[in-house]
Length: 245
Image (tube, rainbow, N blue to C red):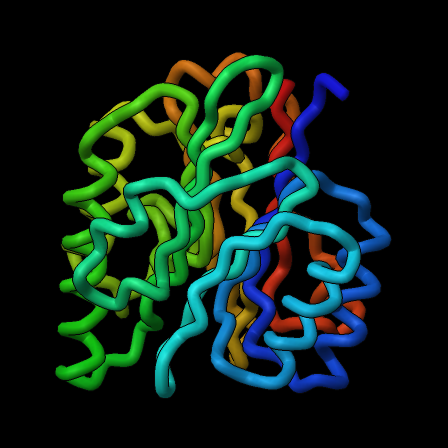
């Protein structure tokens, strides 16, 4: 019981048929907390909500309005919404934050789904504004914080190098590190390039991340990219799993 396992995964706003497969697969993994990104006001996402509610999971979820996307957090550990997610004035359904008690300490978990890399000016601008708001809210460092999600952004040292990303996108990841957050995967595998999404041309992108407060650095025992969801055709994204204890 000393280990806390969190899975973060872009579920791709599933059809109800795919959501049924996703639900049984997720439940079989027996992790403590699931952070699901790219949710929508859809039958598939409602199925996932109802499936885990019936199995007595704690759930924090704001149903996205219209064509917007969001984040759903499912947990065996008792959770409650924290104040951070209530601060967002822009695309607020794309951020969900909760706090919980583990091993006698309070933790905060933040899940997000950053808008995608569409180069159309209006969508480019909405991504920029959303990242600016994320950056502003995450700059207030606190201990015992875990930040994860599909950031639709790669690090400036990413291999291969892409020309599609702008300096402010790279700056967002740099600012996390400047504000004393650590990339959990890089703590353990600093020289390894992983991918969580593969484009149509076969190029890989590490879009999905776990960042942790620096005080948790020594508690990170594992952080891996789990490719089974893609292999099982449950999503076009791999999951990321974080173990701390």
